Structures are given as structure tokens and as C-alpha cells.
Length: 231
Image (cartoon, rainbow, N blue to C red; front, side):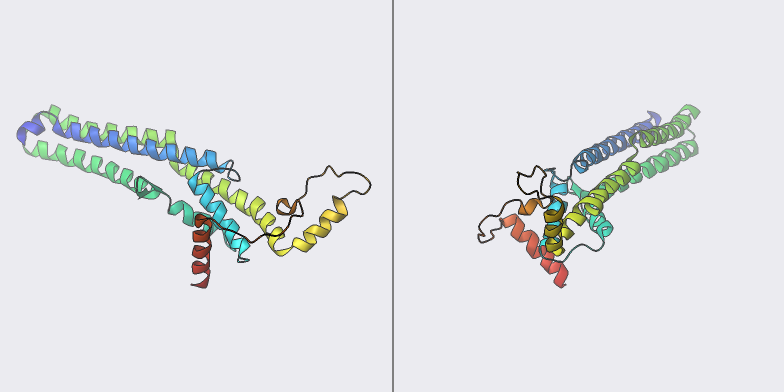
């Protein structure tokens, strides 16, 4: 034990914790960057979170339930998103725990080595390593801007669902007749072929009606929505 303390063991432990925290923060930052890129094209994105949001949102309107509170809907999915089996916010909490541990180990180690009467160099290195390590962690916090990225991601998803997708689905589900009349009045031309794209992408062509078939994934989503709605 004394050999470990005399050979700057506390400094090595603090440095290892700081390095591990920076690596975890980098992983969280990269995850948010990927999510942001996917959210920028959420309508066509194949990212599992964006696809799940889109499918669940669409299913709620197909079942004529709707999504009254889009903000809570988005927040639920963001909070339940996992990376390597842990929630993203859990990873952030682990980083905060490491920061606290570096402070406690550095301070406690410095006091303990001083109590044992070790050289001042050992005491100062133990304390200084903790201060420098936490300074580096705060610097990376500023560079990564994880809190800001989380908020930007949330805003991007909300913007698409609230301002683009929700109005479209409401018109297709609850106001289909009015939408058809609007198309006939403003978008259909007589005597020549219309070059205007139909607003209702689901009713672009009149095709024979066939029995609706769902994939296993879609059936599971529909059952999940019904269970939540029926309580």
C-alpha cells in the first residue's frame, strides 16, 4: 500500500478514470451525432430509432387514435434509447460518477499521504492530478456539448413530427374528403394532363382494393399501440 502511494499510484488511478470518462463522453457524443444526422432526414431514415418513431406515429393515426402530445411521445423514445444495453442518460450519469470519484480519490489520497508524512511531492501530485484531470474533463464537456446536442436532436424530431408529419396524417386520416375536394378544385386540370403532384401520396392512383397485409413488425407495433390506448 505504501509502495503504491509513494510511486504516485493515486495519480495513475485518477488519470485512468479521467481517460475512461473522456472515452465514454466521446461515445455518447458520437451517438448523438449519428442520431442528429438521422433526424435530419427522419422521413426516409433507416436508423432504428427514427424508423420506430415514424412507424409508431403512423400506426397511431391508422388506428385513428392520433398523438395528442407529440413532445411526450418523442421524449419517451429518446429516454428509452439504449447503447450497449444502457440508456444514453445512464452513460451520462456514469461520466458524472467518474468525475466525482476523481475528485474524491485525489482529495482523499492527498490528505492520506499528508497524514502518513510522505514527501510533499507525492501529496502535491496526488492533488494536482485530480485538479488537472477535472479541468480536462470540463474542457471536453465544452467541446462535445452533449446537452446542446440532445436538445437539438429533440427539436429536429419534434419539428418533423409536429409540423410536417402530423398535419399530413391528420388530413389523410380525418379529413380525406376535404383533401380530395381541395385537390379537385386546385390541382386537377381538364383538357390536358395535370403536372401537379397529388398532395395525398397514399391515394395517387385508383387501384383495386386488396386485403391489407401486415408484416410481423407492423403487427407488433399495432398490438403495442392498442395495448397502450386500451390501458
